[in-house]
Image 1 (cartoon, rainbow, N blue to C red):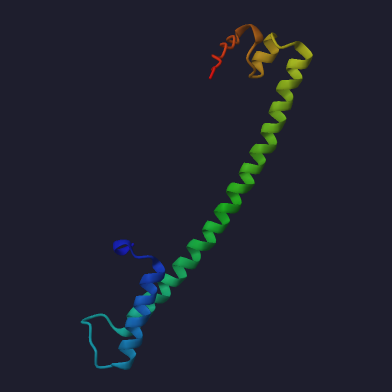
Image 2: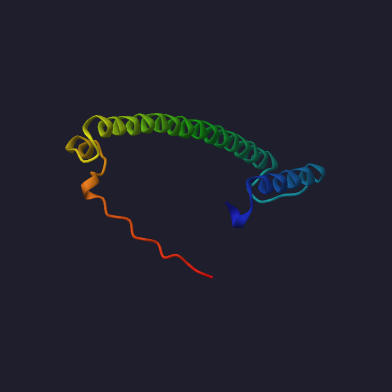
Length: 116
């Protein structure tokens, strides 16, 4: 993007130039014609619309994937809990399912109580 300007700013300024150019047909800008500038404005509008549509589609796809991951994660959690319930918290099956065996857990450290 040109020097920190948003697409909307560029479009607004370009349309302003085109309006002034239309009111002053004698104006010349070398090889750039008013029609060519209008074509570039139209192309930018089309590109912006396509980009916004793709962003909308991407957002939907990401949300769908996240929802499916959440569903699958819930099943994994239930299955791991099932292995723990069926075979015990210190079983190889529970560890194979991704749990941490009770015998391998580090004991909690006693918290220091503060007195005023």
